[in-house]
Image (cartoon, rainbow, N blue to C red):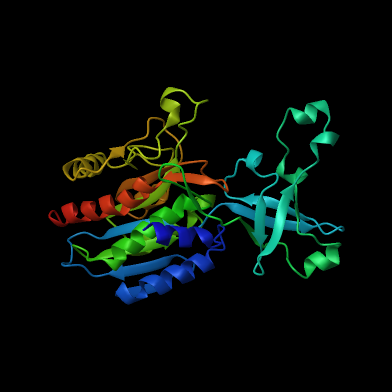
Length: 341
């Protein structure tokens, strides 16, 4: 599970440009799948037969895309202007390394040097349109041979294990969910399942909507990464959740009120099998569940997630124990559901 996640996080898959991730996953699961297709949005849809055909359609989903940058213009002196692709706290951008376009051109995000800032500028975070990407081009003509407006840029892909069982990487949100679904597909299933590796979640859960409309799931399990704010500067409930304290089973976020019966079922399953779990102590974030829940005649949805610090940044941090328990709990949840479908 960990090695799969590290490989997935090393791939570039900025929202709207998920092809490298999709290609890897498709090649990886092809020997185990009964049906594979890619829809017009770019979602990878995998069907795998289980021990029986259930009475209800069950879908699992995790998004392939990650936050990053997208080139909007090239200046006369060869710098790249850009916008954020997905929700990024612009405070983390200056000084970060990115790889831009099909050629993976190396670049560094910069802004006005601190020595030149006026007093009022030092008190605020620079806007994205005040930043630039330096790719070392001497002029616009040189830069245009390497990149074009519309090219996406992904953060530095280095992954590091550190401390007492923690992983640092970009795009753990939501390659951790993708890795969990790969593990499930490679094993035996208690019943037939659809797995959807979705696109463009980071810009409004766009991809999964079409897939859910097509598959018409009655039950959906969304595998995700979720915000942890367990930092010294954050007090009480606003810490939300903590890496290492178990799989997160949310009852609500900003996009979804999860099915109450299903929420209790997931928690009871975790307790029954001795898997640590936690819920979110603060209503924050949103997932593909919001779109799936509202598709066609609606679906019962549940979320399972790994808590991570610094989410939507080049340096997400998650606990290895949570990473490993996510597919374990999802698999047990399917086993328990198998007796009811």
